[in-house]
Image: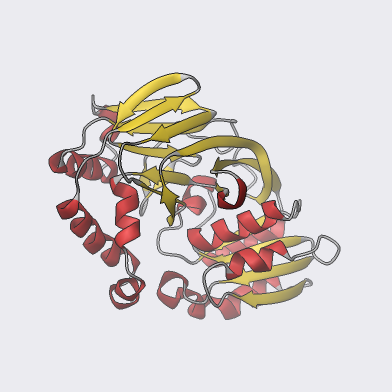
Length: 299
């Protein structure tokens, strides 16, 4: 097989430096490898966008959820049908958790070599030049404000998870709840936070949307109906403990198209990267991309 490896050398606190030699050894057995190291934001997008189906049989992403998101958007924007394999080396790797890909990079390489290809859905946010696809989730409200306030220097100094905790506390102190107007497949809802899932996992390793399926043609929408600081803290702790499904002020719905607006500035993030502010339209793109998965997943 002819593989294009797109590698983020800073993923997971430079975790990839430890694993890259063995990744190259495993994937290089009887295969042709071409490596591209990302140097800055959108490098992975640009590398994926120019990969030709004439020259390669698949793309392999070595990095985290942000790197994967860039590659997926690059592949979609080029109208390529090349399958994408994923070797998780990021901080949380929620796509890998949702897709059943082993978090151990060595075992993940073995999955890539088996090349069991499946089509999965993608979420789509925005239109025109601002359009962006996501594979795992989009977050609106407090959750996005945490990502917005996250400084790269803090991540490099503390590491991914501690930096997110620090940013989360800071965002909670500054938090002022703004009510969202949500329309999902024609039905109206109101809430102060919303997380729209294609996959079932969130954060470090929490199952946030138990019924989410990356190949069912629907997005799972979670609406948090209260916006006080103590409510936000309760929601966060509930998600971490996977108890939020029992909260009476948390609504779970499935939808194909979601429109969200707010009276003041509210941020949205997709796959852990800030995209912009409301209003936004979000919709499902069924069977939008080919990925390499364990054989049993989404069978």
